[in-house]
Image (tube, rainbow, N blue to C red; front, side):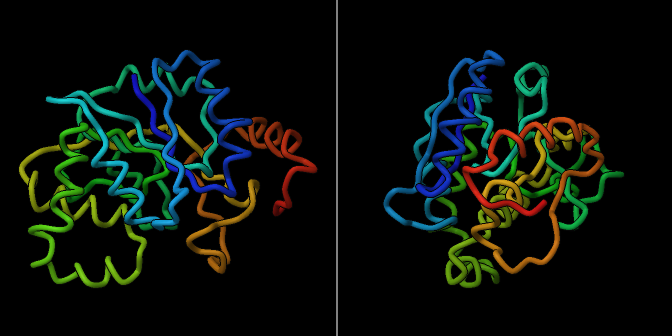
Length: 221
């Protein structure tokens, strides 16, 4: 079970001090970090990370963002669902429909990249697709100009290249989105609302994280 954390330099204090140790404590087989030290930005850094994946067939990687909190049995549950495309984060504020949990068509997939399992072959193909066939997509220029929207690009790739396949939308969520605790959103600093995981009930874990980062960063209480 492989994990890749997508990070940027200013959040490495949380990645190195919290996420990586917790993944190792839970017994993850392989943990790597893709730190955007070159300043490529959300979309291009993500595609570079995708292009670096080396597995074949259904061998895949669990991609998580640097602003998540792992559930207490994250690694165990990932191993139980370590096949195909799996979305481990549902957020109604991001228009995800929790009623569509389970095995669904790609058009009903959730889409946020807080936590998603992707076959490495798909990841590499998506990176190539963005600068190839995606140029004929109506949204291509919007994606490129924004420098963001990595999740939207991958969803569009799935619909274009794997439309007859299914993905798994997994509940309960594997991660909580805690950007508001670990320094705020980088992509959407003026969002004005908390984009939390649907149905997250482990508030004790939230309290533990707040206590652990106190003094390290300002956070919204």
